[in-house]
Image: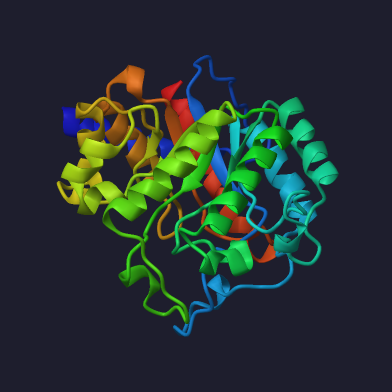
Length: 333
């Protein structure tokens, strides 16, 4: 019976997602207070220049890849589907007053960003900043991405965190990224750098403390746990919000899925992360699995991650991602 119920739950989410695209469909307002978030990219410069075929989407661009009409349509779509949080990957898409040299061509001014934050809040969407400081995803930092663990690097990171916290009026969370910092994920990079052992922890804890100093709570990807569980649970502060992620459909006992259980067992608050990067079933399956395996008081909500730039070419992918979250909201709340 339990197996049938899980299949029915996931099937219902899929049907609800389809129904949400039909004219005249009514969407009830959720009564719960769970976080239902979607990741959107202002900047998509997360990778060094790649030489791998088929990875052109990930190449660094010296200009902003961003379509404002699509952005506005996505915000409206999130409002209609009752999402309540937008995680905005800022990167080099902002003309920071502390470090204007980082900005790409056509980057938003601070005033423009503040205007958009106000608009999101008026739509019931809580804006959360994201700057990924992992060496695997920090191409947005420009020359500073080749200065890791130097005094200059720490100063720039500190400046950016302080300025972003100020722009966002002390956000509840600050997503630091910190995923996939290993050689395997940089094998096609022209410039590779990996912090290991105590140096990785030194730099992560520095960033974490800068966030705390500015009144926000650190939020990171949890995949370090997959490779070094003992070290992770020895050194990871309990006040760091965790986003483990698994984008498949098997949900068998492997290290990626089991990390949800390990984090719960060790008392960490979680926002599990799903994606429609490779299939349309993952979000519903993630909600189902995590609601059954994570204690309610530690399950803050869920994050959807389309992993596409905010440009017209990927409109359908973005819309489907939001529909999948909206479907889960209607089924669970």
